[in-house]
Image (cartoon, rainbow, N blue to C red; front, side, top):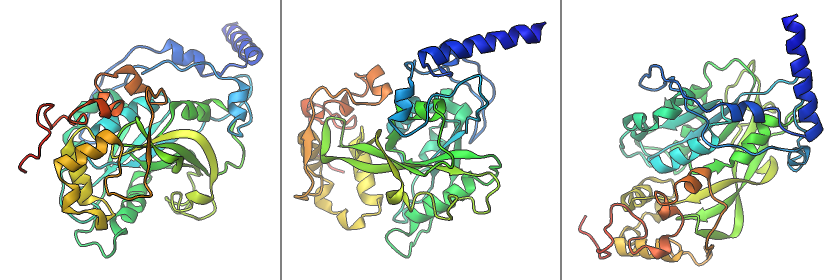
Length: 369
């Protein structure tokens, strides 16, 4: 009798969702708002976060706008693939928190790769390991992967390629189930809306590899790069029984072939050089793969603040033009929720120190380093 009653409830629930074209994951998400805590370890933990923010109901048209079939129907068998989010982390703690908040509802596991060596071969702290407790409420979905990089890399891109491929091999070492894999840098953030669709829609079979097209910002969400968009994260189907852990079904590395993947417009944010501390800007200048741009004149406080406040290119490249957008509402969810905390990502032009927390408002002259 109980079985018949439950079956009737499921059928009625399915008919209601189908009639109003609502996503079957709306109700469970709206009902979840409690948190439970258990133990943690050095690189993984089991602290369960509450639902971060409320999604809005989807329709079939939302799915079709990205060439997905339609909303999943609860009365029809349909497997929801786990979503693994693999990305490279250096020292961008605020950006990491913004990403975790944006995607927590929809990502099964965050695979975060860091190294104690920069891409140019210099020693650096393990910032995520040192700040692990800062992200306690996300721990149940976080896994840290430590990658060994070369101290004397053979080429300009040697360590970056190693970070992506070797890190992914380590991250997927024990993966045995079919998954959807996101790959990106930490500052290439898929929009919550797009991940919501990946969870809620019936996806095409075979699943085509996708590249998310990002709104492209510099310094903050106030300055958008002329041209407006850039290819960013990839989404690929990875079978649990494949031989090579980092390859897509056609035998290609999932990130390397992204420019041939099916584009998903307006599906992510890319905020480049969006730091809250001037020393993080200097750190990136000294450590990123474009070593030819690491010049002393680009490190001065006066130069950096001027570039950040006025939306000018840090490297004085005439081809790089940034357009100021006032009151931009196309921003990640955590920035919407905490605008005062993230004011440096909304309006640097209004701040004498460009919003840098390690530069006082009253002192915009060059500090002795």
